Length: 88
Image (cartoon, rainbow, N blue to C red; front, side, top):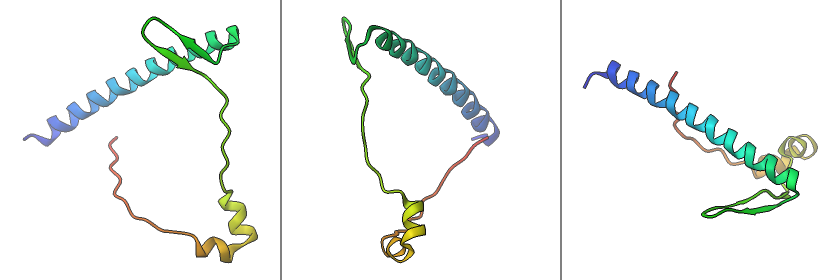
């Protein structure tokens, strides 16, 4: 195994992945623009269905909780460890 060749191949695949992701986002944007202009939340095609709806969700503002009630924030704070791989 030649690690430099492996890293070169990874870099090529990452570039292709970024290009594909950009294309996916551009196509999604086109569909969302069409749906917005037509006032649609659901669009059904011949083989696929797209939805573009407003979604509400509630989350705890941890910064405000730490500031206003640091004792409670500390009591319910959980620390985890993971390994992160980066490649540039």
